[in-house]
Length: 426
Image: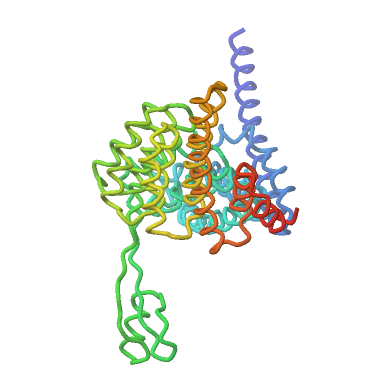
């Protein structure tokens, strides 16, 4: 009885060993088939062959596993280079698995795997450029992020990944990338090396070594090193804008406060924060921030124009006019400022019409009516004068022409009304 049991046990053990032997043989056969297909350029067939071995690979020894994942990395890398975007992450995962498996043992494939991972970074970036050109922004962002994970020192890849995500409207993903950039202290500034070409007189940008060589040769002169602006403020500003887009206004306000600690004089940050308060309906805070911005950039016409817009909305006509006039002092051809300045006079005139319509038919009311009408016409005429001056600089501007036509129509000035209609091509 015991003899039979032992015999049976031996047979079972032999059967198990045989099963493992068959499995190992199957794995190696599938891997050889995958390599053969890959060498012949048939990556899909290689992928199919690997899939046949995938269910058995976890039970294999580390050496066999490393070989399997190395082949898998090559197969998926080839598929990625032929346009299968999802294959990039599979290839990266496979190569990293090779490195992990060989970490404490013989490194038969690790060196090659690391080299191939480095080469994949360039492939990923090139594919991302193509995706961006084809408006596949989500795919571009993913590839650029993968490039960053492969080469963490190249933080610009993460910055460009965030930019692609924003362009594609994937704000949650962009916010994730920007948050990482902020946490790692990404600056983004670059030093550009320039020199003046003696033959052309043009300033040219080149690498430092080349620039120094060209200056030494006498072909170039006036070498300079120009450092671009830091992108820290831009990143926090973009985070705040995304929070606003996602309806997380409190986080947006906190982001602006954080950004301005490091960049208190950044006008663009102040403007973005001011626009957020404007959106939230806090016009007073908006005006305060805009006034702060004008102190920093007193020659920026857009600042004064925006101040004019808010004052106009709040009914502060004189303050609005003052702001629009300042914008026009800085930029005499600022069409929107000209149109809005004219509108302040038209709106004031229209308010008098309401008052005129409430008068009765008594002698005093008729006299008051005539006084108000004259005042209204004078205001309309003032609006027309502003636009006629604007028309000299922008003779084909449809906005100016349309507003002028309406003013002359309201004044009953048929001659000028018909002149403007003709200019409009009506």
